[in-house]
Image (cartoon, rainbow, N blue to C red; front, side):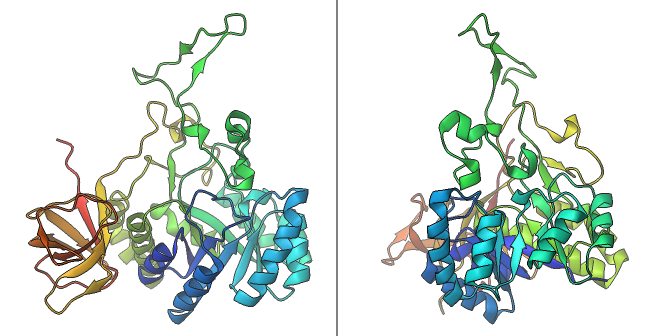
Length: 410
């Protein structure tokens, strides 16, 4: 059996550390240019260094995205950036553009290169092409079935790796190469500036009656015709492994630390349980489902893995996420008196019951006994986002524990 890597997104240094502590084998992140998530916080070169140091201290690899579809004006900047990365030394670069690939091979010839899903890799011939040029890994196009991935594995060298998405948002365009954002807003998705128009509500206009917008009703809210459900393969890890996939990739460089912690911890346990004993994996399936449901989500689909996606892979009546839990903060330190330091993410109150999410898989219910500001002044609530607070929950806490609150919809 091939070694299975759990690959987790990191939109900031804080989230990278969360991913590492909650069970990632590797993380992927973007620098300040040439990645496809320009609206993520992204990393300065100094933060990349800090992230690599932290990850390597915990035996975790770090991959840097440089997967834009480059234009002429990008190439000189790409070369300068790769000269900087040559000194910083991530474990691999993720690239989609052949010109960018050629620069990487020339500037950092010993750097491991992974070919992004943006390169539309749908057949073993494409994998062999990239392997011949020196690529170590290819990320499969999202449109491939597990049967097709298995066929690719059977036709490529044993030391070539396959990476495939296992969880997260699905793009409505082929392998994410979307033109909607560029056409409608002038912001190019293939340059990292997607405005996500696939989540918008649309009406129909007949060409001879301009200005007459005819709604397409599924219900009173309209119809969101491009709005895919989120991918979730937690129930099909055996099939993913049997297809010969080396790296299971979670989507989400725009997501919170709570989301990253929850999906990382859940998939880590599911993979480990299956590798230890398939019966244990099946026995714990309800726990995996429950924990995944605590993340923000747009319902779930298996994408193209078992054949072409149908109408049941779309959400037609709304574009909002399901949000069952609210992120309150991550424990940054614990004082001798039991108070923990957090940067507050959402409002909570003294007396509220919240849940402490721990990296080892435990969820501990606790009551907020006291809140003080950084100046030590007590307060009844935490209403101001990003305020530094000290909180007493009356239970043992550790650095990187995450505080979350279950939401009531009654």
